Image (cartoon, helix red, strand yellow):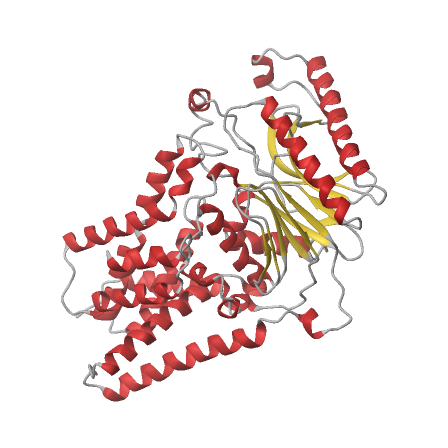
Amino acid sequence: MTACCLLWLAFPPFSWWPLAFLSIAIFIPIITRVEGLTAKEYRWLWYCSSLLWLALLQGIRLAYWPLYGGWLALGLYCGVYIPLWVGVCRKLIHAWEIPWQIVIPSVWVSWELFRGYFVTGFSACLLGHTVVEQPVLLQIASHLGGYGVSAMVVISAGLFYQLWLLSRRVIPVNKRLFCAELSCSIILVVVWIGYGLQAVKSPHEKDPLAKPLLTAALIQENSPTMFEANPDRNARSWQSYMELTKATQKSNPNLDLIIWPESVFTADNPIIDLSADFELPSDLIKQGFNKEEIKSRSREYSLGFRMKTELVQQTVAPKAPHLIVGNDLIQIHSDKMERLNAAIWIDRNGNRAGYYAKRHLVMFGEYIPLGDLLPIIYSTLGMVPASAGDSAKTFDLGQNVLLAPTICFENVLPHLNRRAIVEAKAAGNDPTLMINLTNDGWFRGSSILDHHLSCATLACVENRRPMLIAANTGLSAWIDGSGRRMAVTKRLAADTIVATPYRDSRGGLWQTVGDRPWWILSATCWTLWVWRKKP
């Protein structure tokens, strides 16, 4: 229980990050002791771990009442990982006689990796996220990913434990082996910190002629987010964003880009796009619509979107900036209707120049498992399921400014961030800047906002690209390619960031091979775990 409490304090809202090292160190005697753990002790580990996760993720329940069930299920599920970590480590140490200094960090990372992919994946609150406010400790992520940062936290905790044993003169019989293991741990930690000190500075700091990519305004209002539709509230929210945009431009007349968060530009006026072979899908027929009515609504909504766009760009004239806004996009084909959560790019002339549709949807928030097979689930909850986008997109604003957009919690998963960059590069559009549009107003200013920001911070180092985040109610942020938070807004407040990000041209092993080395290590750990060693 003590170790889990310390680990909770290492994460936001407290962020007492040194306690993460102490927490892991407390587990080491449990893992390395000769006596086996009883079933009761493993159950106790699961209870404590589940309470840790329920405390970390309690903000999830604030979004919508069915998410109380989702919060409980996610907490109990994530609680399984610490007992699994302990159990697998004990098998590899005591049955296979592998040094615990190798086993403990390797198995920890293997389960973090698995958690990032299993079902839909969930990579918030990695152990490495405890140190995101210490940029020097993050730089190794450009080669080893956030998993590498987690591994180094565990290795450092092991080093502290070894030094504690040395101070107590509790030295194993094989002193030579102990000294060798201690020396290796010291070398790894020194390399970790030394590389971080060397790599924390971005390339533009060494180039006096470097210029920012662009000047961008991230607009954040404190607009309430409710599940129930309320046209008046949405209209007031849009007007608040409009007024804040106007005030921002007045003090910053040379903006190149204005970014509004996820969904807020819609204001009950989605875009309806009709395909060339448009026919009325069966679900719309069942709702009593006819073809002409849908065409009329499409024209009406397109006109409304155009008017809103012109109003924003005329307000910030004479130099109309690019706009990237979160807007609902409905696409109607001959056989189906897709409701997309989209980032819409509007060029300086007021034209829709492109869009990106969210690909990784939030379970219980944008869809319900088995909901397509049991539509009554959606009707009972009053939900309309979202559709997933089909590809990564890049917005080319000119002057070598290429943006890679993500929406909401897509930037929580390391492999998805990397995949978006890789796909864009394969298409000949190497992004120079990542952006994220999110509406975190669902979580009422809870620490979920901090966990989201932590994931984005590591993603910047992994991919060596700056990121701009526009978040309704916060936390909006400008983060550079070294994971340094150049500006972060206040939560639950109207606020604006005017960002001037620089290109970060550095490469890294993560950009080349991603998490493949960790999969090899994880497969090795799991194979030894299930393989029964002969006596």
